[in-house]
Image 1 (spheres, one colour):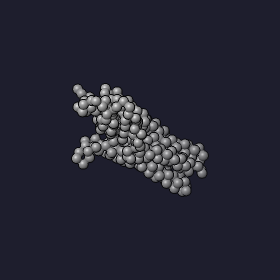
Image 2 (cartoon, rainbow, N blue to C red):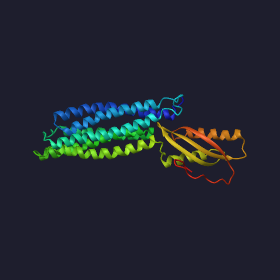
Image 3 (tube, one colour):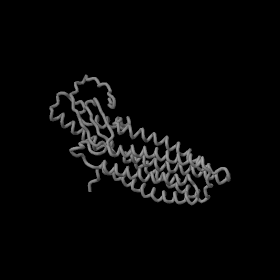
Image 4 (tube, rainbow, N blue to C red):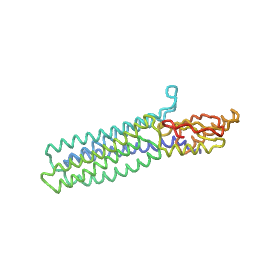
Length: 310
């Protein structure tokens, strides 16, 4: 049986990971909110609210991945891959929003005295930290395999949950040991956790905006694509190479130089071979436009334009 195309496998990995995230977050959200309300831990309730936000974010990522799978049509000749980048953008913005909500609630609770959290909130939080950090590492690993920015953002939602839970453990422990007057330690800890969430939220937002604006991919990937194209028999030089992210893969246009005395048919064949080799490589390239140009043996490399590789 023939194996599935790389892009299809990537989508399956990403979608399966997001579905598992939704199920896990739904379970953890109910446990955290219930325990937080009963145990008077506002940091734990805030943690549960963040898990609800994670579910919404994961659903948007899932929708983005599904839409990105739709083949090109007359209205979208380059396909629908941009939906994945938009899902990544939403994921980053929702992470920043979650940090804002938790910070707002924490400040409100610091200003208004409340009951100290119950001791039984601690084992629940420790369990949450273990589960969420494990989920984060799993999702980060799968996001690299799938090449998904949206899934990478989803992974950081899990880590943000683990961070706020760890902060809550510290705050509740101080509150329980300190007794009267230390109730706000729970909320101060949640506020500290927000700063970590915001830093990573802005980093994810920067990546998502970079890809949405057709920013250049990592230099290592460009170099690898150049090496692969150069290895095709008949290619004398790579003049230009441009790539941009689209969904879980990349769109590329490349200028290859071939011997000027070759026939049009032979030059065309070499161009097709370059395209086939790149699409079948491990670079996750969805499509390539190949420009074939003559090589005289004394041609100078063209200046590097923005977004191009020499």
